[in-house]
Length: 111
Image (cartoon, rainbow, N blue to C red):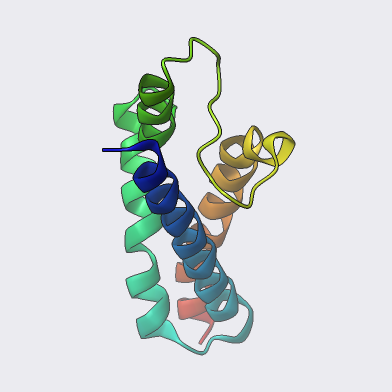
């Protein structure tokens, strides 16, 4: 896999997960869109599984470092995300995702 292909894939995964979190947040706030919100659980859950399997580090980021041959802690692999934001993505988005996902049963029970 080339670095360009990896960057395209990681950018698409990032955008997809943000969209999914938006669908989940919409359901949490309005109670509408349960079925799309349930489907939207899948991509963030897969990313979470990848983080667990790779000891808290994004698998695509690990591949990017291997492709660049960089011994650095980070290799640029998402097109539109500034480095300062990219470094904070997992520490910020993981807790936010967990809160949004945990709120779904409460919303469902509230009606």
